[in-house]
Length: 141
Image 1 (cartoon, rainbow, N blue to C red):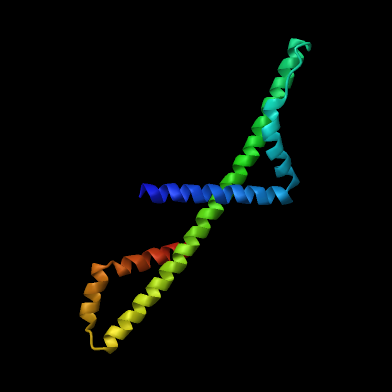
Image 2 (image 1 turned 45 degrees about the vertical axis):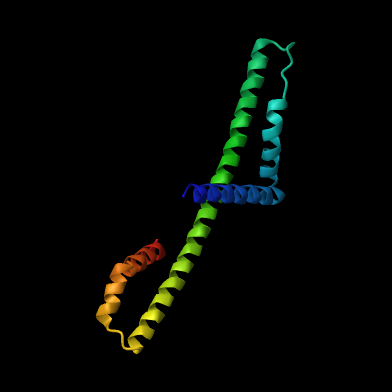
């Protein structure tokens, strides 16, 4: 389970980074913010300035740094949500496919003379109805 979680996090991080790079190619503001994130800490304050000017520059740099990080964080959250929702849609497609296969198998068993009572017992053993309910809840969401 831990390996699956770590793989998920790695794939999610790669997806987010790729999408940030793609968007920065199209979005000039994000590209500028990504560059600023690297350059903000490089700004040096001149010791000859008086104390108030120095504090004002520090505050401006801190505020700029905060805004840049907030924009980047928003973009990352957007792409994380996009990644998770895409994976959820893939999962629902898979569940629909499996549900269709189960229905097909049930029809074949009935045509071969299997009783409906035995099929119901199998459905209860493998929680097929619960899986269908989950799928319907996801579709309604």
